[in-house]
Length: 158
Ligand code: SF4
Image (cartoon, rainbow, N blue to C red):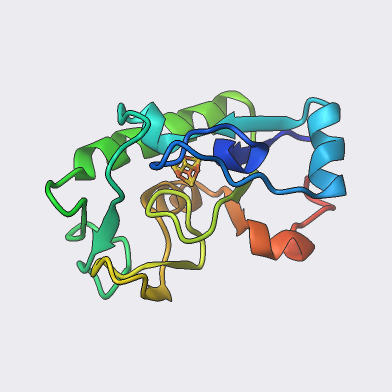
């Protein structure tokens, strides 16, 4: 069985912007972890951002909430796009080094979101879209699923 990239916060690591985690309690994930198949990554920390840090959202570029070359990632105070791009590359490098073809990442995050992210207005509004890391992983042929898509994981390919 191949290894799987996973958002570190889903494994209980306190790496979120607010210093908390969001552990995903699931027997399958627990089994994979016990077998040493999970490779945790936090792209935002990998990109050089601290914990805690101000929340960030993707501002419209290629469309509302859609990560594209003209989009930016911002906190309420600053443009942090470069940290997110660097973190995405760190995650991709880790995946490639481990021969990973599948990632299981935290939904809604401007880095890890795979289907839905916040719309850039800091009003808790969600739009269809993906985070910066998810976009880079997908561009490089890695399948990315959110924690709400565990039933869709392609077990035969893992
Ligand atoms: Fe979790 Fe990804 Fe955000 Fe890090 S960047 S806290 S792994 S959702």
